Length: 123
Image 1 (tube, rainbow, N blue to C red):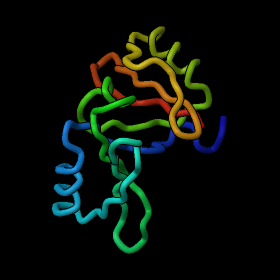
Image 2: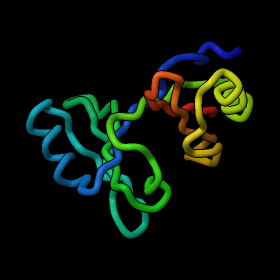
Image 3: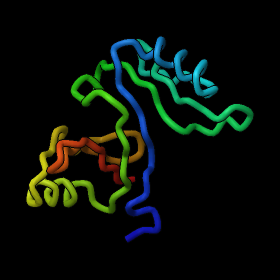
Image 4: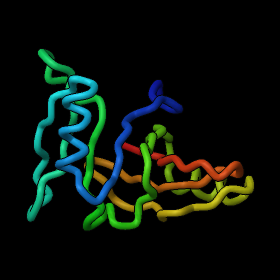
């Protein structure tokens, strides 16, 4: 296991109008948006004012994000996303989005036995 295993590596939300929600979190929480080009549109990293450190993402429900569940989605770091997805299914959960590429790694989305969703991410 790596020292990152089990840590929350990222959190984002996927919505129909990411620009409006970006502005909401900028005005309400004070986060600052940074555009992330997705080709035909921008998603947004939300950063801590003054540091530019990204802490979460606000994404459009388009392209690869079209099938993601609504609400905030936490990404847990795992050593092997395929093995973790298989363990999820064996332990009574569901794999909602099968393992696939993302940035410099792979991820999947699972639903635990209580019905809560989370993502699993392997660098």
